[in-house]
Image 1: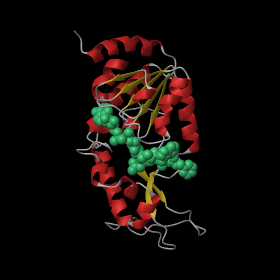
Image 2: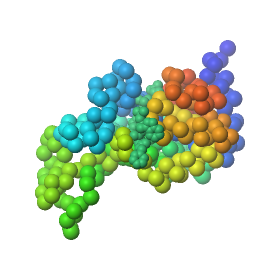
Image 3: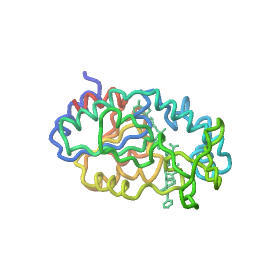
Image 4: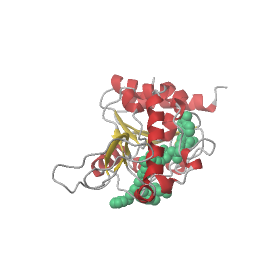
Length: 249
Ligand code: BV8
């Protein structure tokens, strides 16, 4: 007998093929097969070694700018070394074949969906490869960074303002326009795939329930149980790189 997932895959394929509006929410598990550690994977997860609230928050950054800056520098190097995996490529190919059907919403701060060729990605938590000033610049011609020094973020030579990663930290609001677009896509979806997320971080985790209430068929793609399994119609126990090519081909 085909593996339970194979039967589910065969049942889902026609539903995806005839859907006019598909919303996909991705999390760190989407990039795991590209070699980027997930946040909550006990063995290799980044949080296993650090206190997330200490590092991915403004208070944590102000308390120890060097530690947080180095953590992001280390992660950026990992992102630059990583390549999109078969799951990223399957999503991009699906969007190429069926323009205007897919809305891709990601919690990830890497650029692998974009490097796989997907445009219009809704990035709920920002971009780890971008920087911005911690505080608004207070002098006329803007802040100017001093030359990069290891172990500390660039600082403005005039006012001491610090450079920070262009991501959304815990306790910070998500970009309102992006979140509204993501919520609208979830509400209007006929099928929603929730790929590689533990469903632990809000408000992103609420998108699955929003889609379900809007009438979408919600499918979780994840080798493990998640905190939002109760918001889904079914759970395919498998990884992004193995299941997405089979679901979307
Ligand atoms: C906010 C950027 C308010 C930084 C990140 C209710 C409503 C609103 C807020 C809250 C709420 N309850 C609690 C909150 C506060 C908080 C929150 O959610 N806390 C949690 C911890 C309880 N939320 C916030 O603070 C948000 N802000 O709401 O602000 C506000 C409003 C107005 C004005 C001011 C303030 C901001 C949250 C954003 C935080 N930033 N990232 C950085 O990256 O450094 S979150 C971070 O976690 C990443 O973005 C990551 O993507 C995200 C979620 O984790 P996952 O993606 O799910 O990753 P995880 O490791 O957990 O799971 C991986 C999964 O993959 C696992 O299930 C695993 O089984 C699976 N997997 C592994 N391998 C594979 C796989 N799946 C498929 N294939 C594989 N190969």
